[in-house]
Length: 343
Image 1 (cartoon, one colour):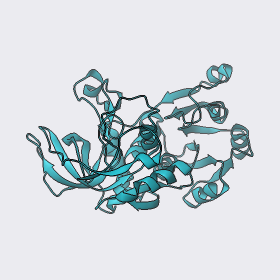
Image 2: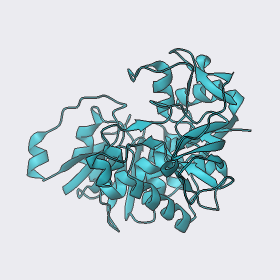
Image 3: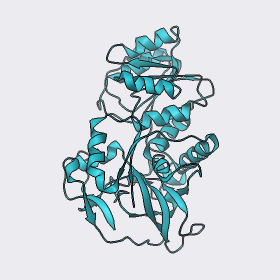
Image 4: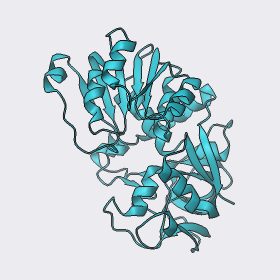
């Protein structure tokens, strides 16, 4: 099979097309013939070696994928070759205390395709049978692939960890990337008002066209102060953020009393200073979130099917153009998902 694999750490130029042996399913596994694979910043972190994980080279990149079942392993029931499926890229053991409690993203041996395990930037990929789901019929393969990391993470941030209720007001930070747009699309049918922040006026305008009520350019304005102005000093009920860093304090200042921040990343910095008096006096909550449980994945897919939602795709590339796709992702010029079309 053809695959985009790396032999060492570095930049996009190291992601090359290689001919690798076709995989075969073991007991409880399936092989997916990949038709589309969406990019995530995880691909750049794996490529650079910044995650500190020891990989066996050549290593195939890619977490997200959608395609058709090519083969089904021993003991797999209810699945057959030819079924159209989307891949949940988070692999759990299914046996530990957290898995048995239905919290697979808290598994003690939690792993990700394209990070710990060979990924989806290939014509074929092997995954546990429980990691594939039929996807909504109105979606193309490219759109289904875009439901992976970002939509699973967004659903858990909003509804499982963030406990978003109808009519509540939400602030989504860093609009433009895949996760922030997933948050906007999933929150829009339920939230009363949605505010977004970005350093790009163009991205703020495009977010408003997708249903955001107001945008804040954090290069020009203090986000906490501007949210207070826009909400007549009330604040928002929920902030969903994947940047962390110094912006966390502004997120806390944006909240109504009893509000909560759900944090699913630290791209702007792994440490932050916050006002503890504000935290306890206003009874605020800071909640961590990572990927999602099997229930989160199933609920997200039902929501997408019922609403007719289509993920925002910025641009597609052929598998052989993976270097250009990764460079484009690295440039941060995109608005929505970047997808590789395979075969």
